Image (cartoon, rainbow, N blue to C red):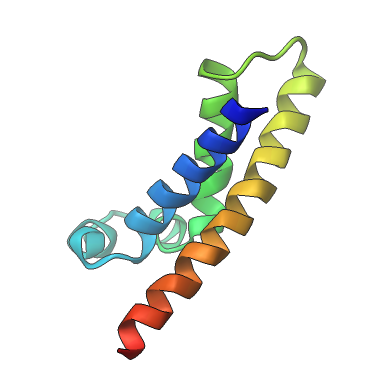
Length: 95
């Protein structure tokens, strides 16, 4: 359970960093294709891919249904963490 929370926090932090911060803005704006640009501007969308790979390679799973359920649970949990991070970033910008 602790590993699941740590992975969810890491996914939230990574997806917010990639999709919202200034340091990755050149990468986001220079991606080929409309689909990739949209994907890299949306932390929730990125969380699906990061969660799938995290469950597949890091967390234990027993069958494909387990893989899907854990992936979607990780997306949900990382989205909650991501919401907290975005709220914090908005507070920093207002100062």
